[in-house]
Structure formats: C-alpha cells, structure tokens
Image (tube, rainbow, N blue to C red; front, top):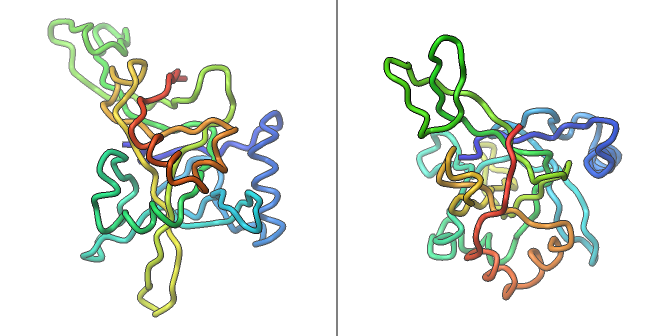
Length: 213
C-alpha cells in the first residue's frame, strides 16, 4: 500500500512550498518531482544536519536484491528484525513530507450510483476500483515516517534511497485497506530521527485518523 503520494504545491500550503523552494535553492529546480509521486521518483525528505531539520532530494524505493524493481514500504512491526531495514532504521531515519497519499477502494456501480462502502453489496453490481486521496482531517500536510538506505548503483556510485514505514490501518482507513503509512505530527520530527526510544514507541503505536477526498 501507499504506492503513490502527493506533493501538491498550492499557494495556501506554505509548508510544502517552503520545502520545495529550499531543495530547489540547494540542488536545482528539477531536483524533486511534485504532484503525484511514484516509486523511483526523487522526492523531498527531511533529515538532521548540524542539529537542524533540512530537506534534500532522495529516490523513493530500496532496490530489490534481484535488481527487478524497488521496495517502497516496510512493515513497522518487523522492520527491526529484517537485515535489509534494521541498519537504516537504527541510523538513518527520515521524515517524508506530503499532502496526502493515494489508495484504491472497491466500489460497485448499480445504475450509475457509486458506493464506497464495502458492506453495501447489491446484486449483479460489478466490483470496480476508485482512487482516493487520504490525509489528516483539517490539515494540509501529512508527514510520514521513513528511513534511508545506501546502495551501490550499476555505475559503482553510492546512492541514497528512502522507504516509507507502514502500520495496521486505523478504523477510518480499514474499510479501504488494512495498512497505512506511519504518520508523524509536526512536533515529532526531531524525536523520530534522533531518539531510539521514541522510534521504538512509534513503531508499535496505532494508525492515525484519516479522511478521504
């Protein structure tokens, strides 16, 4: 899940516009993608540098061991037990700023009437899928917990890639999917990156309340 998320830069979303502006100033205007973010895109993440949170562009997805595609999510409950994730989680945590994430919900279409509720089953209604964007209620920003892995590319150069941590879906999300990103509040960013104790607390806490739009 969470195979797409958004970095929308509407005029009123000052936080994300400031992050994009800082990345562009340091790394160039084309350093990161905006709009709908897909796996392997370079997107802005937040890390600590000199005691301050700073944004930088990093590619989304850990390369798979067989070289075919990337891993974009890691289960928070078991990440510390997985050799591919443990070192990154312990030493290179990051925050992924977004304006929401996408997931696909099942619906049925009897006589052109849509239903987004899985328990609303009508005879002869063919199941289809609809793409929904999820965000925190009454908030324009959604910050996700992540970590950075370091890999050697085909050219022999070392590169950083990030992955998003997921947890069991909250009640508001569960009707659409059983997993969701681990979400951080605006005042938890430094603790997530700096504190191993706080990190372990975050890994086992319940999913956040979300709304779809």
